[in-house]
Amino acid sequence: MYHLTFCLIVISGLLSLFPGQSCAEEQRHVLTSLDGKVDCETWELNGDGWYVKKETLHGGKQEGVELITVDNGVMQIVIIPTRGMSIYEVRSKDMRLGWNSPVEGIVHPAFIDLESRGGLGWLEGFNEWMVRCGLEFAGHPGTDEFVNNTGDTATMDLTLHGKIGNIPASSVEVIVDSEPPHRIRVRGIVFEKFFYGPKLKLTAEVSVVPGADTFRIDDTITNLGSADQEFQIIYHTNFGEPLLGKGAKLYAAINKIAPMNEEAAKGIDNFATYAGPTRGYIEQVYLVEPLANPQGMTGALLQNAKGDRGASMFWSTKQLPYLTIWKNTAAVEDGYVTGIEPATGYPYNRKIERAAGRVPKLKPGETRQFTIDYGLHEDQKSVKSAIKKIETIQGKHPVEVQHKPSAAN
Figure 1 (cartoon, rainbow, N blue to C red):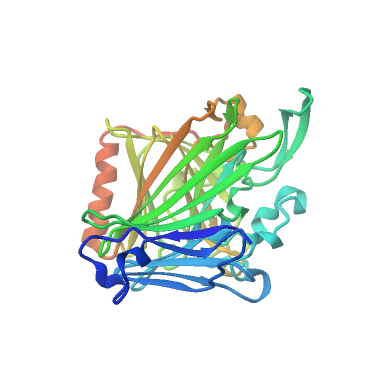
Figure 2: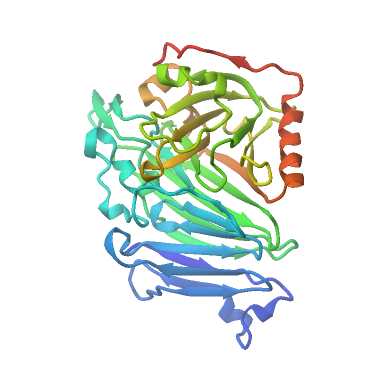
């Protein structure tokens, strides 16, 4: 059992959230504690046109998985504290941000062996809309060197996309801002700490304003150790049907783009458009250096074939200077999906990323912040407005297309 604590900061003037309860009773809600004194499987907070609820899943590999759903009156965001504060899906009317993975249920980390199949075990639980990859390492499995507890250089096996997505949050709180627009925040603390190893703390926050069609991820990573520490993070954001389909299109502000391998090179001229589900399809991955405006902001959007539905994301290249586009338009049974993935680097093995200068470090006590704003667009006008923001960033700047994989591969 891990520590799951819910704290409500009550909005002045909105005491109707809990009719009949005093303010003192409303300030903190402990659902699960390390000593086991409180163990609530379900919990719900109701506001004016919005709610937050917590539930625990049972059966199969999802046994014991805890979910938090935030409904702001426009969309429902389903967060998984048990899986590193990943987001399972976002729904609004007939739109769904998510995908239909072959993985059944929301898998508890207890049933994941990250080292299985040559370090590909991460895929045994992969079905989230957004999962963070990292923190000590991310990207492809393989070997890398590190300094062990005796000060010697040793070899370690890196597994696909790191560990943070399979570490349960140690604490979670729900906060409602006291000032308008009364943003609702779900904030969790996830530790990736080792004796004679990295001591990293992720403070992961998902927030939304009641009635809004946008939401935000706002994270910080802190080095709790006494020495400099490498870290990596990829925001592996995945889209399937109904947004993804034959004729769907990606818009992004791009300075440079290159294929990750020879397979991707075959489709580089059509990287921004999507085919329908295709049996035998081999994934194509593209490495993007985003183009930013003078404030350092960039963006991307996935639009459906009709152009009347879309999902956008905007972020700072000062925080996340790289973008990976993962196209996996395989058969529906095998997982028809695309990934739009802002990151501190590309998904190569850490050894390759370090040599390319794409593995940042945190000094002792240093914190790094990452913010991504997501938008749902449910008509042509809204889609075109978001596309215009991206096209404004792009301006007349030409996209530099590299047709061959880089030597790093």
